[in-house]
Image (cartoon, rainbow, N blue to C red; front, side, top):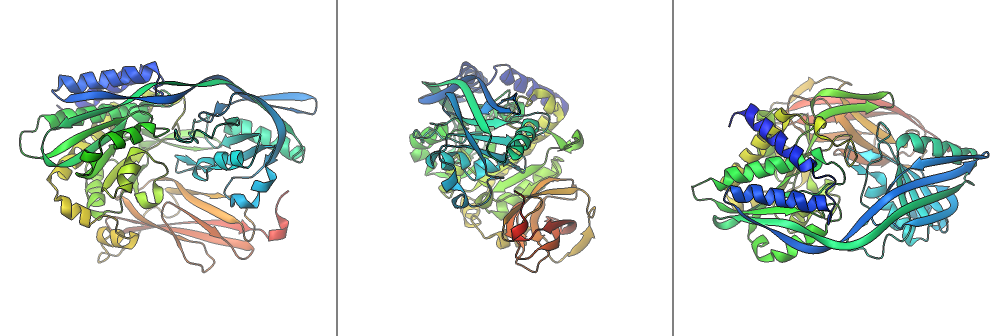
Length: 542
């Protein structure tokens, strides 16, 4: 099939999946999506089945956060944190900043109060309240409720899971997520009231038990097993996350089923319950015997998206694919495959983010990783991630076509690799991986767009001496290759940071010059610099 025709066909498949609506575990949309996928696979001669399990499901109609100030009522629409309690709670509010300081510093102050925090999003994916598990911590400490305002554009309130299915003791207090603009207003009201404001969280919702399921199948081969995985549920329309990847996954499996030469067995893993990981756990339990013979896993997730950049002044398309993060299990063989194919199919910009530092939950790729199985995931999550804006117009047919061919080619290469060689190259140190990929003999001191093309966030933006500071990549334009290593010089003579995000504590006040140096797989070097001020510890804002 020609690339143009393939892209249109996959786009149509993505639209079909999106048409089933929000595909929450146990929902009618999820079941329809599973039936559609299984029907597509069976028409290609692949034996696939729906493996049911009981799931605790969540349904809500409306959630609001309200407050009274200066004889006026302010009301903000919200998304609930999954499985958080319904009903109504009213309590004083406590502001905990970004939630990045050690919780021990403020946790003893939250009992009986509604915790309010500004939640920043790392690399468009992980908000600070999720990375640091703030909801669970404050609930355990006796808080009355929790409100996070998310720094996403256009009034977006992304939906994030903070309670996994095995944590039945959690979810007893209301948890709410409000948009950036509402959060700015509420933050102003709280500051004007000097923390004495009363917040009200109201939620109409319920939890119930229903059937959900995983999709399992086999493409027969020899005794070695390669796992080819995706998740087909979504928190919203889910075009980018994850219908586009589902369409490419279906296409790749059909192509692989037509192979006639001897090859490893392909295990088909399609998970629901992705956002609370229950499906992944059921899958791993049911197929223990096969998993012990699995030599590698490739994940289809966040496969294709238009790239966007945003600031407080608006959103613009970048004219490129969305930034991809290349997650591998610290394995230069997998990383080299990814770099070659990403460049071949023009899927840049892309940055290496090893699973040892980037995996954030117990998803299926995380469970394979924990079993020391070589794992690869090339993922892009745009600013519309986990929101109502994740619609088909955020993807182009051409992007899905390229991404599908890229992933299929990597799978074919994985089928031909020596499993022992792949395993021997797994779990190497960051230094060993980068030294194998970056050609040091070239030493190309080439300034690729100095101080332009790479953006990073600093939180808090005006830190105090001794305060933990997070710095993390937000976007990049780099077409020369895949960024393999990122070094952070904090400008104070301390040990540099490394990777897409880092943290640091400054020991003295004053102006600091932070320099980020990026190295790609061809030896190109790009430097980016920013200045920040560090306050004296005694001059922090109230």
